[in-house]
Image (cartoon, rainbow, N blue to C red; front, side, top):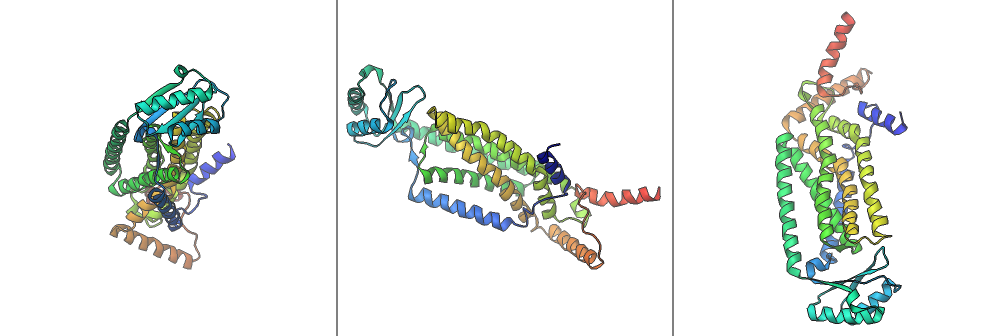
Length: 353
């Protein structure tokens, strides 16, 4: 077995582990700081909306030796507006200019043909109206709202309302961070970005549900034992699925990183670059929130219940008594709360046999 596999097995058995729940205030503070930074960036800098949302023209030139900076100078001089120029993999240029109408677009196209020394007919021009972008944005908001409602309802039915609330908070956390990073670094928001943002919701939810499912199983019969508090079992659930979460996240990030850094950075892959960027940031944020935000938040909410408060008092009292007698702590090999009740009885029967 590999070292990572051995570590995963030991984490699952509870032989080793990190106290995620005990340090939850640190993670909450870090997330709040990042979220506030993202919100401030959105308020101050706003988003660099693509022409799909503000209207304008897209020009695609044939293969040329003109550099990106030179082409940018040419088009901005002709259009009087800022432009975004991308060098595509085949040596052609993709030029976006906002705020152009049909007449101005034809004029810019003619000037660009002169500067690049190519025939005007070989420069493809596409006009985009802002109303189309508005429709896309409205549909995206509608899709996001429907998705959130369905997620909350499903988790409330399949698990419980506290897990639904925690998952909802984690999703909002992931989206806010992703959008905030776009604002901070000035990445352009395109239709591809919207598609990527909607896609990361599913990825973000996947790891969260895996931990929740483990937590649901491990807390069966929790009130019948006095070895573990709810937070203890929540911590074991995170540690037990930690390596799996890391593996699935890394495996998902690798092809996305390929699209982002090779497809986008080297080949200039246009919309693929926009989608992969939001996916890359969102996947990383989703993995973080499922481990450090969602499950600790569930533990916080559950520990407020009278039954869980009473259980915590019994567990702590028993541990204090055991320490006073010089006995060992809880059996780290116990996998579930039910096993904590059944285990000692079974071992006693084995000794009698």
